[in-house]
Image (cartoon, rainbow over all chains, first blue to last red; front, side, top):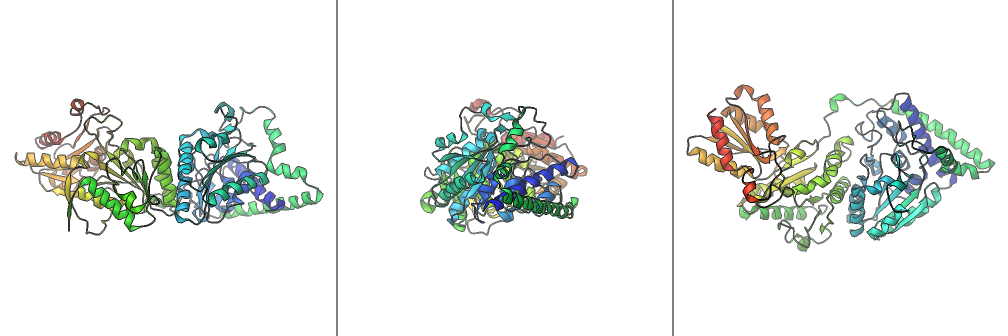
Length: 311
Length: 326
């Protein structure tokens, strides 16, 4: 992707999240939402190197991954509005949605639990031998879950084509990750599984793309899993109701100077700036249209509430 | 032609059939491949099918049950083995929050056609961490199917059914029954899922049991017959789907019910059967519903203590007598 395209892909996620928060505040979104504002370069960079037959898994902070994977904005809005969306039928909402048609294994509300499942998708890929890869994202806090440890070791010993992306936004939900671990870099733990681990600037979409191209390429050729730690910052709270009193004064303001969209804006000349402005206008229209389309999707029929428990 | 084989051999025969039937079936768990399985259930399968189809995993129940789910969602038919049912507790998140939920929470857009094989129950000297009968935990969770074979033939037939359906199925075998031989019908089509079975007919009292308590109930019925009490014995077989129709029809006939399970009394699946009978057969009942179960204590390891808590045929017989003479 060239620069305007990556900007568009990241801005689409940012404006989606912003509109989602507005809809939450106006009462149209029930339940908690966990936004990824500031972390957009990671899913955009990662999904940019993937094939259609690859698998993607994310966490409850996974709207950006869904969008980067090509899940429709109207479907996402509708699902989070509690409507009968074409992706999860109103049964998953913001923190647990998926899209089988996009090989988007989905989000997971249990921290770290998506990693063993992603290993299973990688097992399928390995069994079929077509070179597909399973990419799974977690946050820094998930690195302290046993399920991640088990899945990483399992993927390593079975040489599974899996890439674990650790989005290190320095907060383990509402606690600083540096208070929760004794390693400087989470990627150091990769050595404990005998797999490669690397750290990238997760706010630099080109750096993410390069690191993911290497890790995904390695998995595709049958050389096993790897771990990519992407350093980033959350511009918003852990969840929609988070007052963030635990964050030092000025931290978010400083992060806003370093976030992926601002970074491109800062380096842009007048011509590029004008182009980015045009892109923003187009995305605003895209978001408006998606919200309108989502509102046209009916709520699920309560008479169907017991459907889909079993085959 | 039916073949005589032990329960554990029937499991092995069903697994052989499963791996032979579909290339997308894979089998994994702890010590199942090269070591041939801790109880011999997978004996010879690694040699026959190779490491691409059956392999040993690290001791990581959460990891490999999650892997089973991801593989099932993406088109495989995995069978994962939990060595002891007690070890499933370390992976309850994957069973309850992940495997059981995914079909429903995606509105049917994903499916999870996987089997979790485990074996349960006490054996002499087995401690509280090797003796659980956890069926009620799984029966409580929507989305799971639950099979508890009590005979060699059912070990074969129910496992074959489990690997064929598109739902996640837990097959909880009875370790104490592994050496018991029986006729196994290896030449019949795969049975549909579900269905209780009336093993012995009688007009006086219905005894519902599953797993190890099935042979105990049959033994009790034999003892009681000599006393003139004619018990009807039902092997429930599947807790999900639950064949309550067979239970209800029997209770409507006998007017009396005893439910027997090895699991602890409180919140055991016997309570569910009792509640359903109270709800749906109230007017047919001639005496209170009674349960035979282990008391609410963790399983002790010393055999002399185990004998003080583990339900056996004698307890079933005693309870039936009280029910009939109420």
